[in-house]
Image (cartoon, rainbow, N blue to C red; front, side):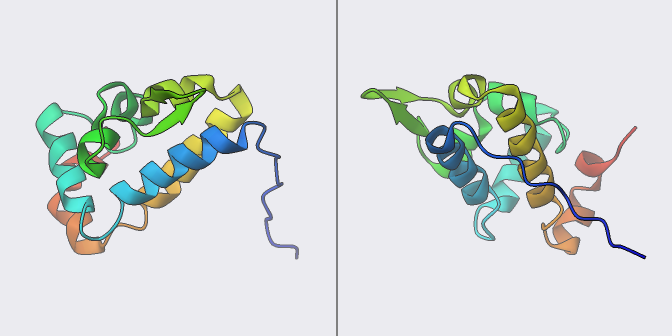
Length: 119
């Protein structure tokens, strides 16, 4: 039997993708992830609702920066960076975010189980 192997899809806008990826990674750092989950809980956002996380600027709140990246000298929010990505890059960013939320410590996931529920 062959094991499943995800096909590699090239990132088209690497700079914007990398900046957004760094912001997501920061939100899931062990010293910041509990604050991130508390903010989600306060705003009534489930952990898998990536668009809501971006549109409410939670990444910026948790990472301590008003803006995440810049383009042509202009500061961009995480939502703006995401919107600047082509559909294939957006899909890969959502997958990256979803993979990061599964790395959260089991005790924290249990503490915030309401955020992780599917219903």
